[in-house]
Image (cartoon, rainbow, N blue to C red; front, side, top):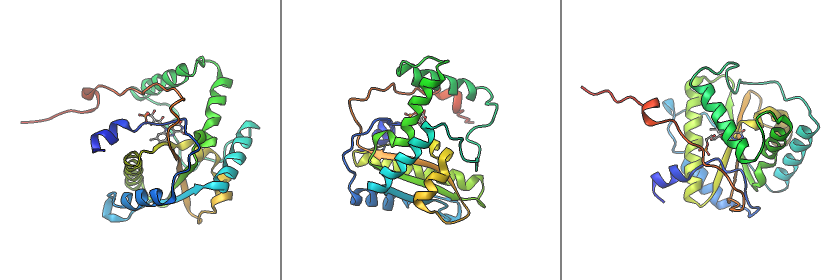
Length: 221
Ligand SMILES: Cc1cc2nc3c(=O)[nH]c(=O)nc-3n(C[C@H](O)[C@H](O)[C@H](O)COP(=O)(O)O)c2cc1C
């Protein structure tokens, strides 16, 4: 698979089969992803990979907790600004409309949205997940490094025939994640990432993108 195909075939997959992901595949992907760049090569990512009974246990705890309507854990970072200005707000609304529209859930059907959201904490059925932490003393450039690292992981997963879904939703139940992973003090859980083989029976709508000239300006003299 060439890089263009890896990039364009990657999407947030929200339906996985239960086919296990071999440990050696995950090791190969994460060994290669370690070559991601970072400012001054500080490699600011701390990753936990969870499979098997421990992942099953985490899913059960998280889904039960959310289903009971427990409040989210205190935020360690804001997922979005409270007011998402233009054009970001419009893009977010378009995404919500697309995603929930495809599931037949109406705009004002908050219960329906909540039911769909609960699938996050079941990893959309995936048999493997990684959890990505960053030290709380690091700053915005290091968060950007972590983003590059995660995209590298996702592209390498495509090269292995695997799919993924990055999920900030896991940060909302970070204490439940910590009960299972016992991460060292001082780390912020940025996100989880479900990993597995796509379930072709789960339908989806491919998310769109802004036109190139909305986000890119060529300047030449
Ligand atoms: C940092 C990050 C966090 C995300 N969190 C979630 C999440 O919690 N749940 C979810 O279903 N999708 C999540 N997504 C997936 C995005 O919704 C998705 O990437 C975006 O809509 C573009 O669609 P595509 O990845 O299918 O091209 C996240 C993506 C990123 C990069």
